[in-house]
Amino acid sequence: MSIQNPPEDFVVVDLPSRELQIAEDLKAVNETIGDNPDCDIIIDFSMVEVITSSSLSNLLILRNLLIEHRRRLILCNVSVLTKCVFRVAGLDEVFEFADDKPTAVAAVHSAD
Image (cartoon, rainbow, N blue to C red; front, side):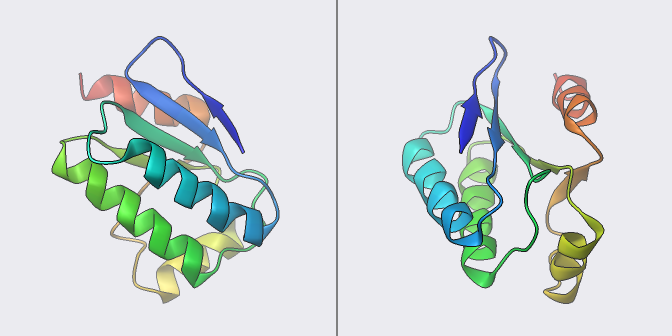
């Protein structure tokens, strides 16, 4: 997992391609954010091939942590196949998606 922390109030997390590592990385992000998230988070799915319920659960936990503190979680570069998993799970309307990193960054800035 790669975490980029630009000078703005957001963090970009680049997920790996292996599902087991994705779940572990998302759990680590949740633990790092903890009870006091002070930034928006953009998660880049460009290397992700498949996502499982464990990763979806960690994403929901992260989303709820951020919402409680009026912060945003934006998922970008989500493949069609992965987006279908979100749709089948009924989560395509729960999460905020962006086509790519620049679009996600623009969405974060538009809320300022």
